[in-house]
Length: 290
Image (cartoon, rainbow, N blue to C red):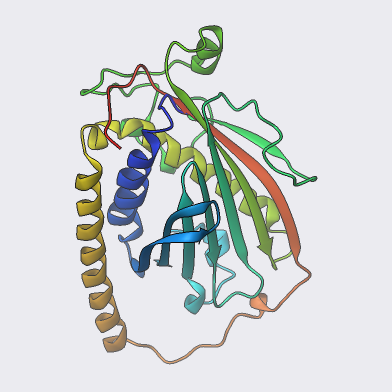
């Protein structure tokens, strides 16, 4: 849950979660990088009409060590397909080198505090509410500048948020805009005993991303959609240059082929579904062109 209005969120998501996560994090470190293969509108797809993107993440060091240890080096590549028909989006992650592995996330954006339980027809669903203020963060992931308890926006004067910020809103509904992102996550994974770790990993990623969404608002406030599209183009070109350099280095330093770990052999697989609801809110937001 976030203190933003639904019309504001697409600009925030595009500017921060798209551009900054790619340029600041996923493209840093050995073996890391992002390729944007397609970015085009569609008229007959998930949610009706929207924007389709196809990316390849060379994830390198950006996955947990327990996950990296069971994968061959060639498997450290994840493909992302995304259909953005906001306020509905669908994102699918697959790994070409890992059999029967996928993460499929459907997101519904609603102007409430996470009290709708009938958005999915999935019968066996576990619900995990996310609180960007009180949910724990691993010590090595914690950053003072991304702590909603401490952050106050220079441009909007929003924040800091108290531990009871959701209760405060429920006691004064309508005082500020609010929105909740309902995320239905479906995971298929052929590694026995790993499903709970994958669930925890996805939950932690959601917490961190939405803490950043709140604490980075000064970086997107005041930008027009034209500004954001230009940033997208510049980022795509910069990533293409980086990946071209990585390919040259890989060909130069290529090592002899190695055997694939026997741990990658197919095992009885688990298919499970769960919901992750993330809620964030804002103090009365200024006008934002979208």
